[in-house]
Length: 123
Image (cartoon, rainbow, N blue to C red):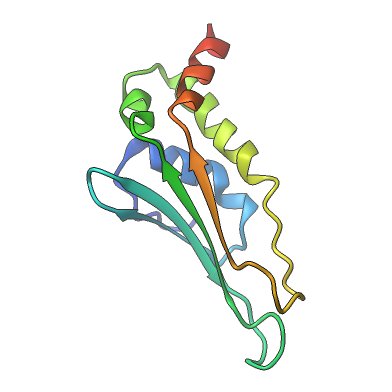
């Protein structure tokens, strides 16, 4: 298992839920400030610089104000549900390694409402 350099429990839960969606060499790190932490997944594909594929790729997860503080105050079942919801948001991400014009940095905004939805599902 990869080492995760993540302090916040919500982001650690999300990172663990995302591990198998990205290449095994991807780095998953907490970035940003203590007031506005984010999660960043990055990896590099191999290839020659003049050919598609030799590029750095990344996904920046931005957590809306309140999402992380709400996470800390809910039961474990709700936390797991929240992490699975973020995972589901990530399943649609497409990386076209053969396209020279591909977007190599994607942003996923994680709303605080996602924690509330997870709470209502858990009952």
